Length: 326
Image (cartoon, rainbow, N blue to C red; front, side):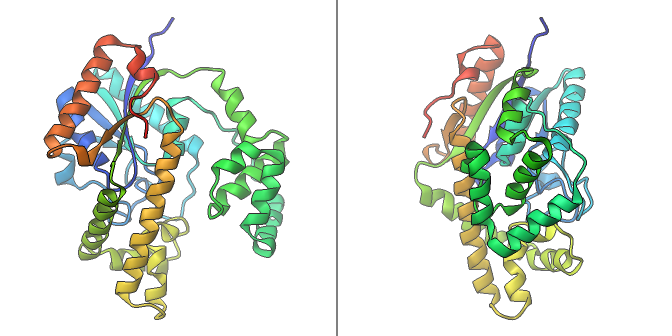
């Protein structure tokens, strides 16, 4: 039997400190970071996506960031294929791969080796679904999905119309739901033995205050100009990213900049809640609470101790079931 690759994952909501912890663990474990962030893949979105700067990387190689032109589509399947190749390369050089990010679908698909059927797009079917979306709204389509795939429907937010349409499109094209496809793909097993470290805060207001501060820093660092550039060039997904679309009312003259930034703070807090909802479903997550540690070093020490124990024991219970799930 081939030995599974030990894979360290740092996950959690936005502004919880994943980037800093990932870098610190990479320095201590002679590792490299593989990003699992669906917005950091795009070029020209450094501020809105909180792309790590050269100083923040501290010389640690980062993969899967800043490589895709704005406006290009990028599927979960494409992410997993590229991330798997990055991990294989890192391991071949006797380095420790550390996956860092907040996009739950990327992380679960990568860690559990979930494959996605890449059907050729049926443009006529997609157009019909998008027209129904426009006429009836996302709630109606989500109800349509719930009738054939209640499990997928329960996981999708009503605002995530893109994935609702995609789930229906896949079902009508293939006759197989995403839930069934996921179940079948998992039968192949995963090449990884993961240790998933989740960052959270006992006091939700502690996390929200970090989010509020981050938005202020983003604004100081040029978020408005970055958003204007993406929106003016109609860069599809990039223009709809959190941090960009919330500024559109300001650009259209119907909201002040302060009001737009307050709305961005609110939408980012809501996004963090959705991220936590996703990660709580995975019982393997080992939760560390950032507001319970006297400084970053203590938090990093706790995470490092988990990693050392995990790597020393190999496939052990700490990698299979998490601790202190919130």
